[in-house]
Length: 393
Ligand code: FAD
Image (cartoon, rainbow, N blue to C red; front, side, top):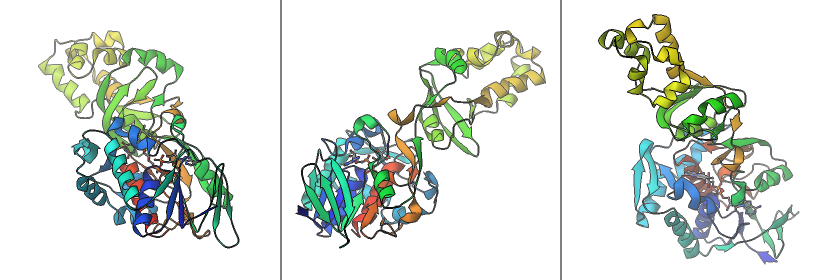
C-alpha cells in the first residue's frame, strides 16, 4: 500500500498542472495514468504545435449548464499566467488569427515544461496504470486499487478528460466515478467536430472536396466567421468545428459564403455596370466555380446580369448568403477535439474544484461540464481548473 497526500488520476493537461501546484505546496503527489505516455493530447493538439491559450479569454468563450462556474478559475489563473510559464521556459510561440497562441516548434515544448515542473517538485507519475476500483473509507481516505498497487490518500483528483479520440485512450472513467459518488453527469456529446451530410447533399457536394473559404455560419443565435472546408466526408474547418459545439441533431446551419459583401446590393449594381456579363462570370470572381455550379442552376448562371429580375437576385442571394443545410450528424468522438457535457458544475466548488458533498474529491479539466471554443480555450480551462485544485488538495 502506498500512502500519499494526493492522487491525481490522468496525466493530461489539467492533471499535470494540478500535480505541479500541489507539489509546490510540498504535498506528496502521485499521478496515475492509464496510457504508456503522459500528455498525449497535448502532443497531438494544434496540429502538433499546441494552441496552448488565447490572448482573449472570456467566460463567453465557454459552454456549460452553469455558465458562471468557469469565471473564478479563469480569473485566478489567467492566460497571462500561463504565458509567463511559457516565456520563463523560453518556448518560442506565435499568435495566429483571433489571438490564438501556438508553439513555433512543437507541442513537445509545452509537455516538457510541465514534466520538468513535475520533476522539480517531486511529483511521481506512474504510467500504464489500470485502476480497478475506488473506495471512500470511513476515515474519509480514498483507497485506489490498481492491478499492481493500492494507494491511500486524502485528496483524490479526477483529471481523466473527455471521450474524444478513444484511440488515444479516452475513457468514461471520470463520469463513472462521479456517478459512484452520486454526482450528476450531464449527457455528453462530441464537440469541435466536423459534420457529415445527408445522402443527397453528400452526393451533390462530393465534387467540392478540398475547397476552403471564409464563411459566416449560424445555428440559432450563435454564429462564427471563420474558414469552411469541404471534405470528402462533409463539412469541416474552424467554422464548422466552432458551430458544432452549439448544433443539436435535426437542426440546420445557415451559411453565408460571402460574409464580407452585401451580395444582393453587389448584384444590383452589376446589373447596370456589367450588364452584358454572365452571372457565372461575375460569381466566379467571388467564389470557386465548382461551388457556384453546385448551388445555382446552370440556366440562371448563363443569364446576363441585365436580364436578372429582382426576384432572381433575391434567390441567388439566398443560395449564397443564406445557404441552409441540415447536417446528417457529426463525425462523433472519433475526430472530436472535445466533449460537451460532463460532471455537473453545481456539485463542485468553483473556487477549489472540490465536490461540495464529498470532501477530498476534486474534478478538473474537460471531465467537467465546461467546454471551450476552438482557439486555446480548452487548454486554458485545463490549466486554470488544474491550478485552482492544486492550491487546495
Ligand atoms: P486530457 O488532456 O485528455 O488528459 C486526460 C488524461 O487522463 C489522459 O492522459 C488519459 O490517458 C488519462 N486517462 C483517461 N482515463 C483514465 C483512466 N481510467 N485511468 C488513468 N488515466 C486515465 N485544446 C486547445 O485548447 N488547443 C488545442 O490546440 C487543442 N487541440 C486539440 C487537438 C485534438 C486532436 C484534440 C483531441 C483535442 C485538442 N484540444 C485542444 C482539446 C484539449 O486537448 C483538451 O481539452 C485537454 O487536453 C483537456 O485536458 P484534460 O486534462 O481535462 O484531459
